[in-house]
Image (cartoon, rainbow, N blue to C red; front, side, top):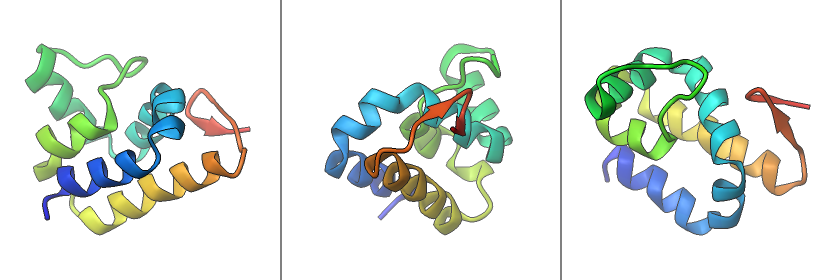
Length: 96
């Protein structure tokens, strides 16, 4: 299963949490995987804006080759989803 498929599987099982927090998740994940987010943004729109990174599921597809450790990316993403599911909140891509 590709990285994109694995991320989309996590999203499909946690749709409400993901879609309600998508932007905060993008900010959080882009801090850890900046090159992948930059690459995906440039492929998708021709430019990268660190204040508005592309969605994580797009990065898992278009920027996958810039992520050295796919398992860690999945683990980090799932950890964010889990914390949000437990009621934690985020601002500026960080947990409050």
